[in-house]
Length: 233
Ligand code: SAH
Image 1: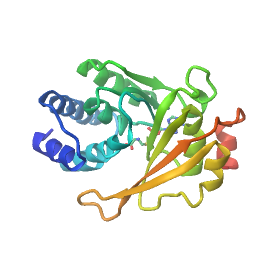
Image 2 (image 1 turned 45 degrees about the vertical axis):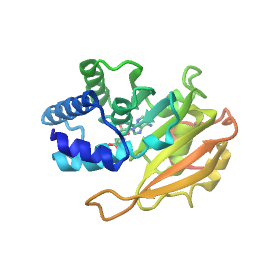
Image 3 (image 1 turned 45 degrees about the horizontal axis):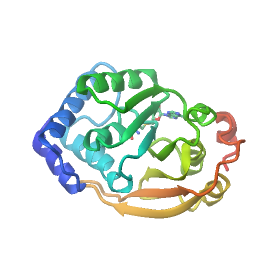
Image 4 (image 1 turned 90 degrees about the vertical axis):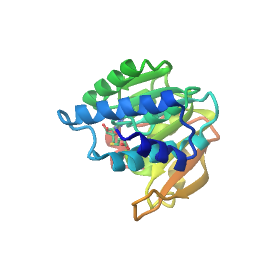
């Protein structure tokens, strides 16, 4: 992985990288590329695109995560944004969740290789964790990129967030908030802010949708995935 591209991506996202962090990011991406030759983890494979679409995009979230927060990344895939964030934010306690086992196996390999502490890779479905006492109401921040539409995502993520915490949904040019008002309210959330930004080489802006959890989520949520899909809030 080209170091300069990593450093430039960090700089644009307002992240200061130590030499050790740059090294860790490069090791992570090298293992990603190597593993991707055998099993499909991501469609983005050249250094330039990885630096902007994966790393810079992930790091853009950092400014909205309080110091020493517990963070859960739902549908993290190959570790974006959660693992990319953990490397540059050693203060965070990060839980990476994905429903696909091969992705979680890859994440665990990176965690072991980089000897990251306070980092957990979990093979699970968000809707199951949301009904589990050990995970519900536990996190300062939930984050998710490219997982599902915002009303569904809110039902998957808000139950996991502590009251007073926040969900940060990484979206494209359509922030999807217009169709999500009712869902957010019913789950105890409140739309705080939508932040727009651009990535180099991309024609469309990106948005960070920040939803704060004001009230406890009612026990009937999250529902089973079939129900969530068939009758979204
Ligand atoms: N966040 C990553 C991956 C996006 S692909 C990125 O932006 O690059 C969406 C991922 O979400 C897939 O890896 C899929 O396995 C996972 N996923 C979808 N529904 C899920 C659920 N209900 N619980 C946990 N993971 C889920």
